[in-house]
Image 1 (cartoon, each protein chain N blue to C red):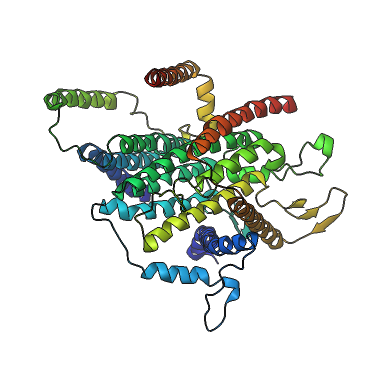
Image 2: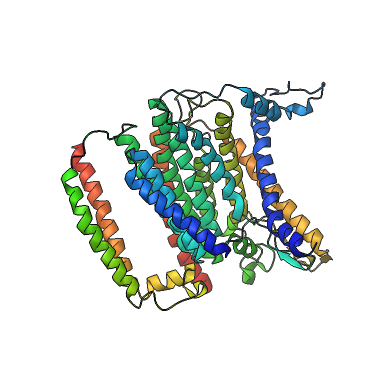
Length: 166
Length: 369
């Protein structure tokens, strides 16, 4: 019972902060809503006993990436809210078909067999040992591809900054 | 002590103990800061605060500070973001306080048929939890810098963010070596692992495997990066209280006091982390669950409660010694320039931490055969 109440509170927090992130015009407020959202998702992981995922979520996303977001916003637009007309206003119409497509997709996924087999949270591999073993056995290739992608992005950033300097 | 009351005591006892110790250490540190700097600079230091003529070596000054801060004007700039401006000091203090939760201060306490782990929260990934809380603390500073509607405060917030990111990467990479040696992310397991003998085939049971001996490079990397996350001298460029203007320039009264307190709380957390990871945590050399077992064969039996009390006392003693060393460093070194701190973090601490991981992995392979 207690966990159900906690789930709904967290779910409301996650959805509410996601809405806040989209609705707020002030970019810093949006970024801080993103931090709340990431923390709420981490708490949901924690409720599924995926402690390692929760900690990694907070450290990597909330503690590093969101800090960089806020940092970049503070450097680029210090405190000025985007009050002018939206230059991409015409694209808003795309939201309706894209949203409908996404809803259809989610409905299809929910109807598929992935979520119909019930699993108790305790058997879901979420510990650091399970995650580590999977990363270095079944998912080794995607893992290495991801690291290669990150390396490429890193080198790309360095190349861009070097070009600007000269 | 049974039933619900016992459950509540078992659950909240360790939490209350941690809160009590951390908050009081943070408060006393303001006195230590004044007195230790005074002794190091051949001064007397703050000693005038008195109640009915009782001065207690200036120990009443933290009390006077609190009264002064609570009664000062609570100023807020006209163009400030009111919500974020008010929220920022709370965020800073909250994550500073929450970080200590998974640091163990003793082994399992067995009392009245219960087994109580002596740490506020038992987490399998405790070491990552502390890291996460330390890394979230920076949002308080960034919110303060941005919400003040003051460009100097904003620059201070940016310096804080850049410093914290470079320091946290180094912290995360340097503790990986410790995790590899003791094979766990649970800080209680790491503390227990440090009670094992170091290389028993060579040294017998003479030397305990404290992190300082198994991971000497990681100790210095962690300590340096840890001092950087506390934002105190020599890494105080986010605030720069004497020349450059910091992120809390617009804060006054107790809100400013909370930022100052957050720095002291983070100092306590760094001292606790260093103790738990590198100085054996609550381990007393040669003290085992049943009493002392010395390597030359002598044994001294002790009751369970005495063993636990010795362990908790030892942990607190080690934390206090670490705090003393951190204070010594703070009053010895001058401030790094911003670019020097960045270069130290990204080109010094971080590559050395990666090197430490590689070397540790190699040595572990050799030792385990």
